[in-house]
Length: 136
Image 1 (cartoon, rainbow, N blue to C red):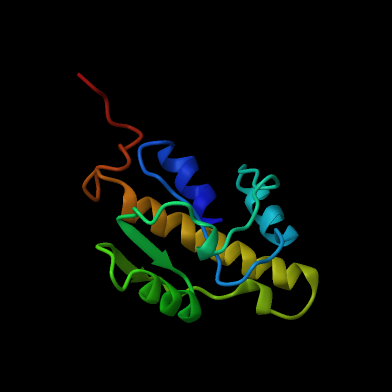
Image 2 (cartoon, rainbow, N blue to C red):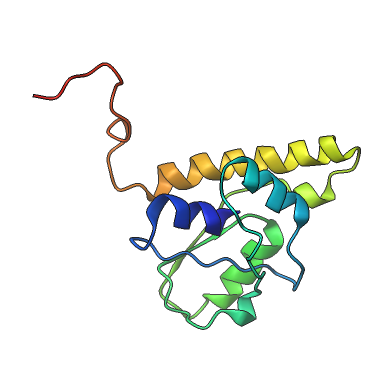
């Protein structure tokens, strides 16, 4: 979800790549939650840290304690920053499909806000123009 939002909001101006701690399959609930936002991730293929071809990142954003630990180990001898955005693992939520999907939606919405705010180079407040303001 995070990689898809990064590419959606910033195109090629910022390079985004996602990686998990363990190899896995694309989660259909993540696909459904992103589809509701108008972003299609159905063709995404999950990767692990080991799959990343380039260690030339400026920054790694981790979403779980396990991923954060792995990223710190990965970057121990590299000049890159690692930050941690604590994020609920929606795949660990139990209950009805709708209840679990709500957890995915919450993660989706939180990531969208964080990614826009963190990576947008414009100063806070300059990101959205007031609707009723006229330009001269």
